[in-house]
Image (tube, rainbow, N blue to C red):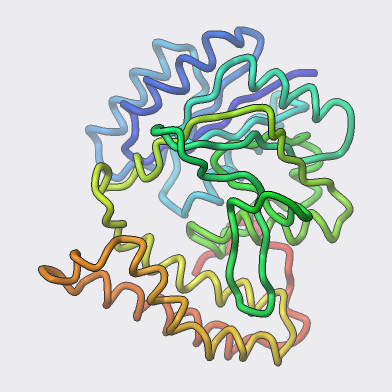
Length: 302
């Protein structure tokens, strides 16, 4: 089966050069699509030069979010006949052998497949994704139970399956789009599988401006809080939706603490970011109504 590697680049050309180039070198039969939504000319020129040198297919686009970028990349791969698409983050290292195992799993059944993902220091980062509907909390390191979502950092899927599901919903600019996709995939009968004996390495936060520190980006705080409630708006009944809204301050505090308490000693912008995201998500959820579509329309913007 023909295979495409898809990466969304946002001013991460150095990471792409380090990780994607190494993966692609061991997969000469795979075509590479780099969707570039970098914010300035300098980074756009760098990725264009790298793509030209490597013989990759470069797709420039406005920054409509991670999910929209992946969708555009899969569409390009589909246009030249890729039957299986492998999506990788710029800050993730995946060997060619790992990709081959993932591709083989997709050939056998209708599935979205991912490896176990570890941090660069060897700590576990993703083993299987689960969602607590009662509490509105996610787990990414569950050791047993049903796989309810998989990380968007590294996965393989039949291109036709992705298109049938509608891809990522671009109403999630970033974060929670993988949970939304997992929800829709399970409902559609698509299996979610984690290859526990295969490992990719993720330099967590490597694409963010705060890379190398515990602190998260402003967008991380805002989008995590907002999109939890966007998910509730599209997938939960009225009672559950309101429970998630009422418990959102506690969730916002948990998200804020992922960046550490010390950040608040010198800068209150993270606090404002989680507040803004929570209020935006609550307004979105309160305006929702029964029958809202759970599959995205193309290029839906906020």
